Length: 639
Image (cartoon, rainbow, N blue to C red; front, side, top):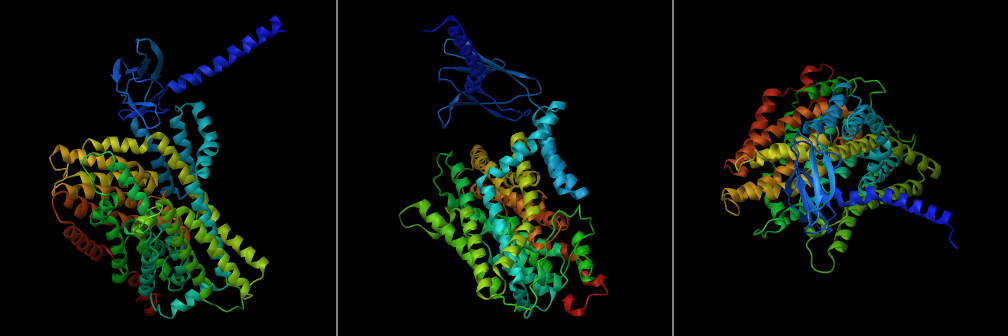
């Protein structure tokens, strides 16, 4: 029998549960973002029926049904705080929330702070940590308590989220396995064998740099694999011919992402075509396929083409300028390939693994594992793409575009490691214990760069929470016109990628917004679907892709920049400092003679040709031959 005391206890427990559930129920009914930027639109989720009414400061907001069945509303706040109110069909107030917004420019502060500290003090890990901490402090209200919360969340939230992302961990495992393979083939004489074999045909610096660029073009299917394979393969050869690590990192970087972004069968294609398809689904009256739009946008993708062309202009003219010229002269003089820094400042250190004494140097010990890596990666992408498309006759481009690049890269790197181990043991070059040891030595060489990469991802998450990209798009979106549309989109994508360090992130955010916006602007001026207007639309699509690659190239926060430096054994900040003048020159030429010129009616091929001429003239005026200022350089090396 239930006693009065027991009933009282149960009643109290029920009241406590209801009080605890109350806020949860309220949050489910009306949910606004935790941080709102002044003048930037934000989305409100409403757990209500169609006949409910939502107002902001007394002004009604339109409710639209979302994909998951919830109701959504768009709103904007100014400097003054706002009051959000939800009413039922009878006009009864169900919930009220007070909203406030912070100045939108604050969303840029963490990224710009991290970039500034990294460039000035060469303390990349400290710069990234301070950027994450500053972003968390801004997000939580910029109070003393907010600083403590932000400090705690740096590891417990932001780094943990970066590490728990499956695609991020796929990249991490890929890099670790590649590092292990490189450790084995370095010790068993494979890389030295390649160097010895290639050195027979490479007689001077120009040939070595040309070979590096051509290898970058050959390994086109993925930018990560490209950077890691080419950098590690050519590093010893470039050292022998006194080519600076900075120059090697630049060539590797410029033949990685730019090539993968424009080739017809790469790991980038499925992602880009998927974004285009998603954006086109919101437009009525446009029935063109997403892949066709991508193909037609390629001629307007000026920056990747000009960046690759400029690499070969530099190589064949033997001219450099800016910090790269100093790096090349130091290398020719037999000095360090980068400016002297303390061990604490050197954030990308290579673990030098010497070839085991007394063994034969066989190039096949490195070539075969690398070929296995390429074959398994491409085969994995095609296999997963065919499974995703299902039965039927599908083209190779569609199949490749639908493939799971991250899984394929892990399969390829694992197969390459196993191949290197089997070949080493089969030839009795090392014992199993030695092989395992140097596999771990190769893995260890990746740990510090991967730490930086993980922190860069964490900072990208903070930027996303702060709405950095939303602010940049909102700030420039209203100023667009048909003629300036490609140039504005290219510039916005570049600056956003520079601030966030993520080309794919920028493409994922901007592409679904750019295509409907460009179509709407063209339609407003009577150009949508016309022969005059469609080139502007294709150039706008290309502007997102090219601008993202440009900003990615300039940013020390970008993972592709880090991987190129890591694989080339170059200090990250040295790579950014030496590459930045080149990237800025090519980017400005691509903007003026590509996006701006095409927007005002110039044919794409004329713009591309004019850009090449301008780059050649600029190099002639600005560039000098490194060997002219180095007495110690031998005639053979100077060619």
